[in-house]
Length: 503
Picture 1 (spheres, rainbow, N blue to C red):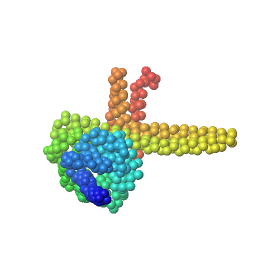
Picture 2 (picture 1 turned 120 degrees about the vertical axis):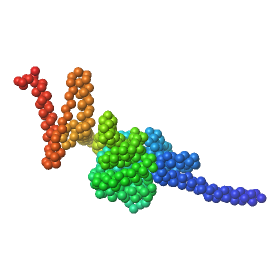
Picture 3 (picture 1 turned 90 degrees about the vertical axis):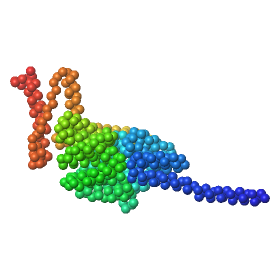
Picture 4 (picture 1 turned 60 degrees about the vertical axis):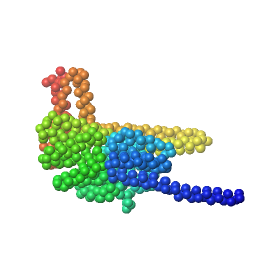
């Protein structure tokens, strides 16, 4: 009787185990399917539509595993970034990266890419720089080529936005090589659009046109609304530069419609600027005004300073043609302000990149030097019985190491001074650049106010100097230095009497 009860219990237990094995996937798979579908929809629908779906899926994530929850969090953070909730998105992605236990390597890389991308797009280069370097380091330890391609595409965007076009092109090519013949259509879509934009910035119209066309095919096949719109926008820019204004306008209109559908403020503003500029050039002032009005609500929402500068410049031109000079002057002032902020941020980031590379090399040399010193110390200890000879060897090693270290520090300081000097002067004329000019002008103006002395600013223009450069080449650099010598000579004469002695 006892044996029969045990057998019955064993059969029931086995049935329960089998039932759990059959039922468990039914509970696990739907959550994974929801996240997979949500990830696809996050590229093909507006952020508002995706947010409603996020709320539905979030209620079903309670029993999902840690990896699935992390994927869901990344989708939710990206959605906040697209809605221009930048600060909350940054806080959440930082918390995700600091989570214990840590994320899987591929998800950590995706989080670093997201942090870098949303900061760079919003011109917060310094904040995104650490994430950018971490992502490049992590990419070396991730086996998934598609994830590494995402990282290199982000690197291409980073360098494009600070004007390092050749480096941006290298990273975009590397991203495309990693995708190869795989089905990573989204990665190909992004990398092709960024390579095309870089080629356009370099003036390579035909390669840029081919890349934009191919990118559009991949982006529409996913579909990806944002990058489809950006590829259309790029095609319009190429056609405009080729003089095909009618086709360019059609592409700008389509790009604006796609980016409106995606509710992507930065892209909407860029497309509207290009369309309004073309309408202005074709004398259609009312249409240009209407186009700019359609994106007025995102003018201060879009993160890119260059887009804002371009927008106010077009608005200034429109106001000028409408004979509203007061508005034209105000818009031009804002355009200059945003353009200056963008230029200063870009210049600072390029200098930081140069110094960072230099510091890496210096640290590597110092590490090698320390290793050499440690080897010398170990050798000295092993040969301690040799007395004076070992002492002499150790002393010599220390002197050599000190000399090498001093030389290394001297070279590093000299290179830093050279980079600082390069960041303040124009490479062609040797004159102070835009940022340094305004710094010194402000200092002298404030000093003049404090001392009650006069402040004079001389603005000069060299007539037909472009024709001189075109005829004789850019070796004609004399006007800048000539003007500087003449001004100094005149100032000296004003300080001295006719006899050449100080008054």
